[in-house]
Length: 317
Image (tube, rainbow, N blue to C red; front, top):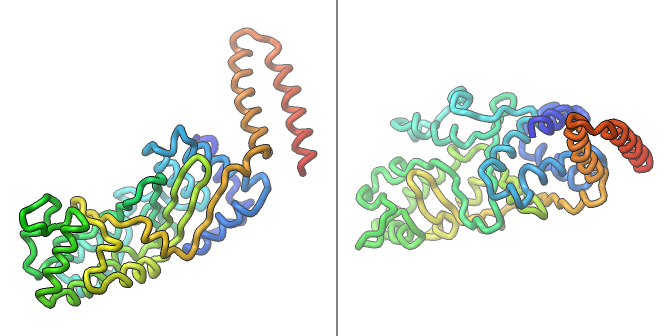
């Protein structure tokens, strides 16, 4: 996989990638990958299929890590670790005057790939039947502070049926705020937290063996989507529950609101030059083993196969 990542990085100038400044740059890149039928596009598609989406790997945690490695190599971004995130400086609104460090920490956690000028994106990968999306830390004690609800800020079932652990519990909690005429104040705070914490652009990718479906959201779009549910107790149409300090949402509702989508279909690789290269690469490594285990014909055979491969390349140029 490291070899392939080095080739991905090598291809960057051939794609004309100089800098990434916004979510539209990334959307347009993947549109070209799906549309074009050249070597460079096939190589990217082949990498994403082999290391992110093949049925043997797409359910593994490593595929999500490889997805980040790909973005770092392809677009020249840095994969965010704890140290790099700490170097991100944010101007936290004075509304959060007493909890600025907590709010800034929630936002830093969302940065997965950092580009120049502190432009950062959040990456999320899911498998098709993941219908719930974990959006990470969203400080619940800050959100509910001042509403007299501290005894209900738990995910455990309770006799009252009020809490944060399910849609039903959260609905009951919002109903208390509504009855106490504090729902508008709550939504005002909620929207301010969404606007700041989720200001990074988001790419959501649903992976399977047949395709990789990309959904692109700007920070403003995320804010507008959540704001559209800040009425009555309608927030539970998109927010499912808390788990610890992390907010979990209804994935499908978010996807329905997406205005930028790209589907990379892997059947394009069938019969492509990358299919030939993959076959040759496997044969090459087997011939290394044959040669070092005493088979003198391995060298001659692989040279002949290489000539045949390049003749096929010339036919397709």
